[in-house]
Image (cartoon, rainbow, N blue to C red; front, side):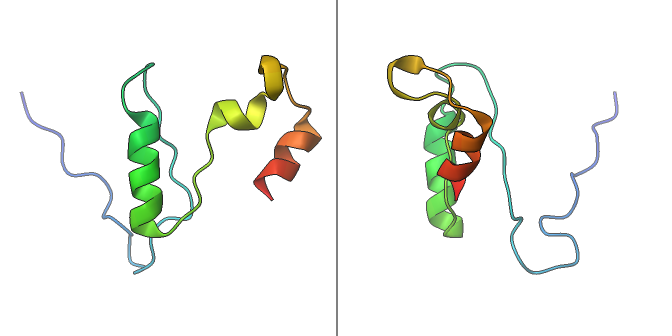
Length: 71
């Protein structure tokens, strides 16, 4: 079986890092840890999906609240 080739070059032709990175995976797989480390390394903001989508007591936030919380 042939191994797939490498993914797209790290930053394409540009020398700047990507503007957004989405980290996905199952529960307790280290998504938050990876996201925070990437954020620190790339000097980027980190947004956690649950914190954007839900407020206190796990009540859903409106779409406007979600957008406002990102800034």
